[in-house]
Length: 182
Image (cartoon, rainbow, N blue to C red; front, side):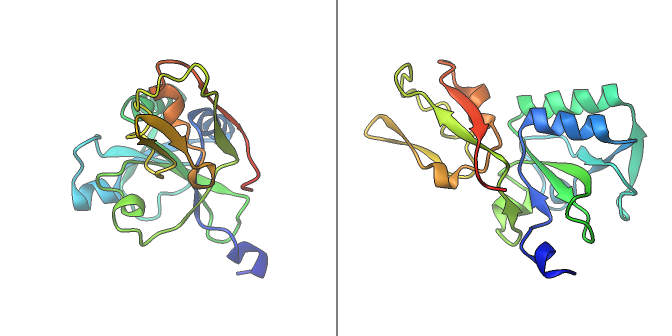
C-alpha cells in the first residue's frame, strides 16, 4: 500500500445526490444483506441495503436494476441512513459500493472500531429562518448539531456531509456546500 493511500480510510460519507452519481457511473450493481444488521440486529432498517459495484467479496448478493437501486436509495433517505461509499483496498480512486448505515447497529457508529472520511460537503445553516425546533439534531449521527437552551448550536468541524439534516428541517434553512474535507 502506498504512503499516499494510507492517509485515506476505506469508507467516506456522501450525500444522497452523490450516491446517485456513483450509481450512474457503475457498470452494474448488486445488493447484499448488511453484515452489521445481520450480526447486531437493526431496529431501523431492512437488512438488504448494501450496494456493490464489484464482486461482493464473499457476501451473498444478487444483481439488481438501476430502478431497484433508486428504490433502495429512496428507502435509505426515508429511513435516515447515512450513505457511506467504500473504496477499493488497492485503489483509493475506485469506489466498490455503498453502505447505508444507521446508528443502531452499524459498527462504525456503534462500536467505533472503524474510521470514515468526511464527505466533500458540509452543512450550511441559515439560522435567521430557523425555528430551533431541534428536528435536525437526532438525525445527525456525527453530533454536529445540538440544542443548548432551546437554541440550535452547530459544530461544523463535526459535520461529515451526509445531508440528513437537510431532509429533517421543516424551515428549509439547511443546505450542503462544498467543504474542504477532501
